[in-house]
Length: 145
Image (cartoon, rainbow, N blue to C red):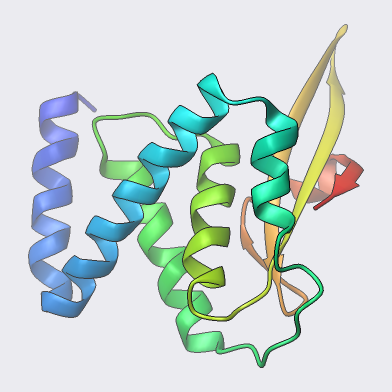
């Protein structure tokens, strides 16, 4: 799909979600951009440190909000003219959830593809995978943040 068609499809999806959904999609796009830039220019240990700042806090899981965040991240990642792979998606979703008091855990895994190691991240909240779960079972977990 061309970048123009992706942007047009995103605008169509935005029109379907209403004003509250538009705010969430715009916030999600901003979080995805920040995560992508952070992963490019900031040492990973510092980025993970930001992610870990509220890990010990416990709060009730609002499953409706988790579902909305998941949907927003997947829609923006799919239709955005900017490519967002699993790691920025997980970081953005984590921040969106954290800002609403929901604790999440980022899993970093690895698998072999021929003679290469391939990494993947996925995010879980309340025992449910939010982002990246489609292939998580194929990866061995190296770390959880």
